[in-house]
Image (tube, rainbow, N blue to C red):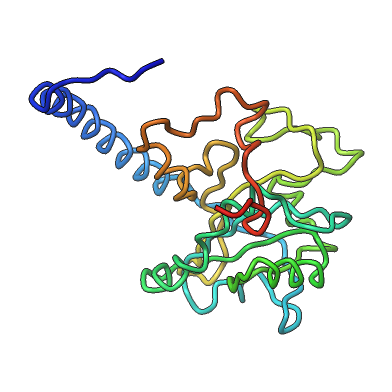
Length: 233
């Protein structure tokens, strides 16, 4: 369908109307972000230890001396030979934002169930440098509802029970804080479309004339590839 066209004056008038809606959305988003921060904290009772290039590291050590920790749950099943293309799509910006987050007392880490050697090989292939550790042999992914065992009675119970997820691995984010008592607390988790806010490519596409342009695809991210698999532009 051909786009609507208008004079500059007509465009300006419609743009002002849209600006009011954008301001309303911004205020609503700010209120939602404040509500996230007001959720109660839940003390983390388990001791989680991950495999890292420097050796075993605890959940506390992933804070890297800061008081807040954001973990991206990257889909990488132990049997897979490469990481999820969609999680890779999300992770492309992590190297760029990590130093800025550090200035605001926030550490970012990525956690997957695949063994460390697979993670490091894929990380090298992608040219990434962010902190990526393996949760192999721990309950971490299962406890935070991004991995599902075959015998799990709640298998497929994803996004707080709102989505029936068919596979053994799912994406998500979980946020933790160090309390004044020295304990680690879980403060927030999000899944599915809740992850959109971490993807700058989608934010840019959303302001392009055709948007995400995914309606005709068999599923929304069908077009996504690992960045070294796109045809030459």
